[in-house]
Length: 624
Ligand code: AGP
Image (tube, rainbow, N blue to C red):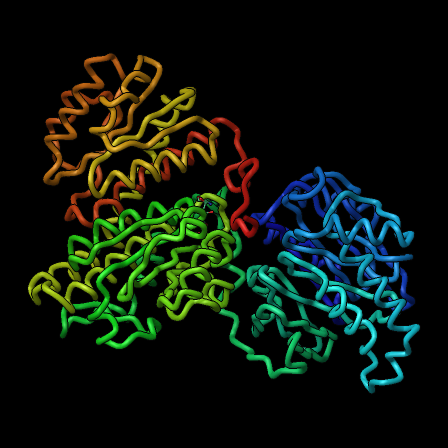
């Protein structure tokens, strides 16, 4: 869960490497480093513990000149955050330097062999093993005279890399520079994302597209088992098994403004306020009035295939799993197809009986979450159609799924997912409409649902006007140590998501429950210090939720209610009420979550937490 960058070209490499690491900081931020290689073959390296700001300060004292270099921002898996464990790591007698994103499972056994051969280790990382392993093969293959057998000046370093990679078990995104070949970077991937930005007479390498915005306008998505030789004016891609391959070059779909704060104090708040546009983007071109349905260009399934779907499995992690829960209610209500929601980390090993006619959707913002990728691969191995609902174009899950739907929500940089969540829920609503209209959902109902969906962005704009009110409320509750979130039916997932948002950025313990579940135990937690947030828009379980609210009030628990405008009853009981615009129940989770995103955000700010880079977390969890 780290971020890696590389640059070769006429510019001062340090400038791009540092800015690139800033943009990748959401992937890991406990230590960082970069190294450049001068044409004379001298390495300049600077590494620090902590965030990229610390590295930037250190570079003032210890600059890294040169037009070629690599960099890394870390989320420690092997070895504590320290300067010694920070990347890049050197191989052999500093014949190469590399930075790595991923985990090498068999590093200990390889390390023992290298130690026995006299290699010295400066760190306790798995990554340094790769560096020494490549250095070992560079030496051996040179002794075997491999260079004489090939006309490529890079035959030796490429052969050494291939040989070393063949010994590794695990995942990697790698950028490697060689002392004796100071005009190229080798980039290789297996299970961790890696892209190359194509510029005029320069190339950029990065873990994802965000560092490229404003630097390159073309992008190459590397796939597993591919090795790229990246030079200033040339990019060659080879595949482990099939040698040199033609690589597809795509237009870069993001601009610099997408990855800048745009006047907001934090990316999370910017992304909360981008939700009206991200919802317009996810629906654009997908709502079909003449058929009163939704259409998707990338499912790669025929209407007959879709007609024969008799079970849907939605699998995901974290916030995406909460969107899957909303999807279950939507698809079962609108399409009458049985749906199962599975934690990807459980599904990958649970081996459930899955009969034909089952469709799997892997829901993921980043497209790189290891558990979700593994669950998708497991279902694909068994021959089931595996679709992805994903935000990052060209990501691993998007590449490996048999089809899918892109969210087009734009880069989501805040670690706490917000706009991706509402876009995932909107996509699931459109899929429910699509499946429903292939079954029993009437033309009339389809029209009504399309009307509701189209009205959503403006409803969200109105809901965002509550920001000031929610900030005041956050001031009242920011000292709480435990908060309960309660909802029923469509808004049970909202309770879970609201609690997760608060937990992950303010570090306050919070728990979401189906409101009726309280009396089966959790109500014991209720006291004057433990607020309960009730998510209770109008709908067929409103009265039930109101009785649950009264049970909490009867035990002296403070109550915050998220209710629909015009609801006078709740104001008589709740201590505080946030009124959201009314929408039909099946879309209410996309509206009721907005004040909960803002509530968590303002409480975290008031508690002085780093909202965009919460402790112990990273934006995409690429290790198991
Ligand atoms: C949500 O705010 C968290 N960042 C986390 O739970 C996230 O949803 C989870 O890691 C899944 O990520 P994905 O959607 O990129 O697969």
